[in-house]
Image (tube, rainbow, N blue to C red; front, side, top):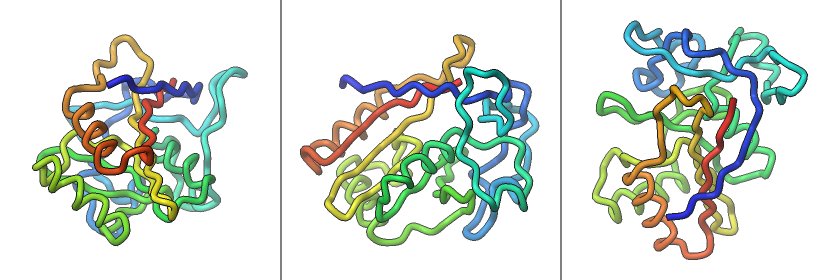
Length: 190
C-alpha cells in the first residue's frame, strides 16, 4: 500500500529519555503524572522547548503548564493537530506487552466509547485482531464518516520503527470497510 508521508520539524528530546509505560495506565490516569518510567527502553519525544530556529513549536495546552510535562509523545502532538479539524473523536493509542490503551490529546487515558468503539469493533472483526495489532498511532473520526489514521515515525536513521505489514493490513482493511473515507499517512518528525 502506498502511504503518504507528512513531515514535521518538531524538536526532539533524543534517545536518552526513558520510555513512559503508557500501556500501564488505566482510565482517568494522566500520561505525565501517572505513567511509570521504564528502565529498559528509551524513546524519542517531542520537546516542548524549541531547539533551533527551524523547529516547529509543538502544540501545547494550558493544562500542560499545570501538570508540568517537559516533552510530549509525538502521537499526542499529532492528535492535537487533528483536533483543530473538529473531529467527533480523536485519540492516540499505545499497545505493548499485550495491553492497548487509548489516550486523549489532553494526555488522559480514556475508555472506548461510541462512535470510536463502533469503529474499533468493526476493525477487530474484519482483521481478527482483538488488540488491533498494526493500528496506526493516532485516529480521528468525523460526523461525515471520514476516518483519519496517522502513524508517528521519527526521522533518525538509528530508529528502526518502520511501517510494517500489519499496519499495511489494517490500513487496507479500513479502506475496504469505509471506501473513500479513510485518510492514512505517516508523520515523519524530528
